[in-house]
Length: 303
Image (cartoon, rainbow, N blue to C red; front, side, top):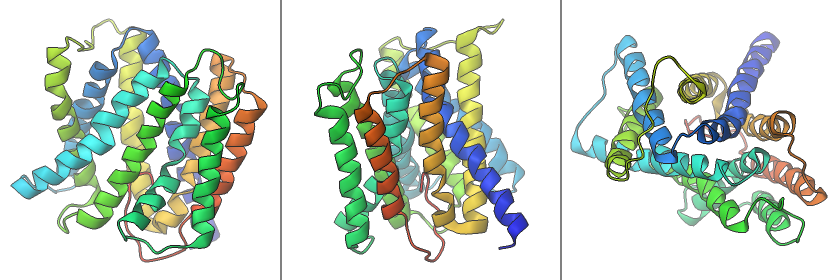
């Protein structure tokens, strides 16, 4: 890879990682403006999926709809969109955005932990040490009396930790079960659409729909921004994986966490204790240890 291409791809990583980093803040703004977690998730699934369907068609592809393909989209939609996105919006109402960004950054650690359990990846003492550092980072938030802000709760932190657990599960499901005829663009399209459809009945029955009205207010602009962020991040991340592989692309996780913490400080005037800063350092070290060594390319979401 030439120096020019490497810097170009690093710029793409900053775009994807930075935009993912502002997602917790946008989630907080959307819920503070009156958006319901279920209604907002529905828009992310159906709105984002419809946009990705246009991309798939423009690329001259189609969305395979055989039963096995639909089952695959559905499982990925639940683990990658419906449940974690709802938890993200719900957690944003109760946790600082910096803490949520820190929680989400655990995706590569949990991906490797699950890969060991299902025997997708080999056991490595160095990478296991990275998982231990990530676990210690969470303990620094939960155990000390001053670990979390007074307005936050351990229960919601644990709920937020389910988000990276589900993303990590999705990564391993994709690695093991993805059909050969389903490329990354088609996968994202099917996953978002099925995730949105899965949550549609729950949203309807609970009367949790978040309408998009004109003229646009904060809730409408934020909802559209979240859809756009998802699409841009997916497109950029897939582009980087295709040209440089998942190891290089995984560096976006560092940017996501740091941007999320900084946005929380700048926009929401969040102040973190020494325990939180120590947890951030440990999580960064853990990600560095768990980071994959170069291997044949495979596309994974949130690698």
